[in-house]
Image (tube, rainbow, N blue to C red):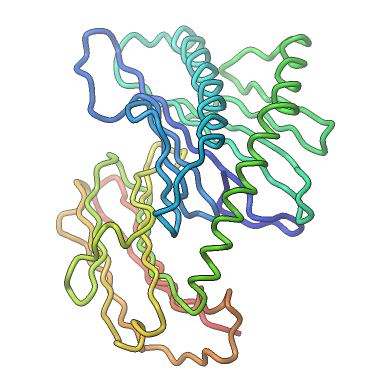
Length: 322
């Protein structure tokens, strides 16, 4: 479970992105699940779960890896707690905001961090409702628990505060750190096999509505989905969405000087958007780089954001070694 940054003194942290959709009475049901969870490590999706499938799908670098039974049970238990909390919060907000119909979207970012010696550092949750901040809780230093009810909810009394502290300290933090260690070890094993490879990534963000078509092309031909990691549309927390697709490229493939193109179409775009990069256009001295820099050297970063009138902007950057 992880978050998209690395802090000094910490290993990569874990973040969940559960989303809960609700509809008013009599409305047609949508095909997307009511409750979805995406688990990420360093901005890379590693696990997916939703209320339709009711089981985990591993989406890390090695997609042949399976979710073990104990991991599945831990996750199901935590997600039931999350679902209960989000449902409780929805009824409070529905009454407070006088909502009677329409699709309501509730989002939660939940994550844990641990020190480089493997000891837990903190666990936190942050909730939004229809892209508006609702509340935030954090347990840190193995002693301190704080809760910010925001402007839309009532604060907890002393008994509820104690109950939540016990839950975070003895259940949620323990399960989150255990899962984080498991996923870290799995990804580290995979990284050893991928040594000397590179990553090409397409990232689209800031778009609404959530439906988007994005394809990674190699010499004009679509790359098979089973070769890619990521691919799930994720909420951004501000009412818009993001999507990332990544491809591992070996040094042998890089020598073939393939042309990689990210192509996307969306309702807010008048025309299809294409952004390309050709391998071999940058001078690379592989012998002087560490494995980490090798992994980042030809990172192809494409990002575009949509504005209200349907315009967009795109950028391409290739990190260099120092």
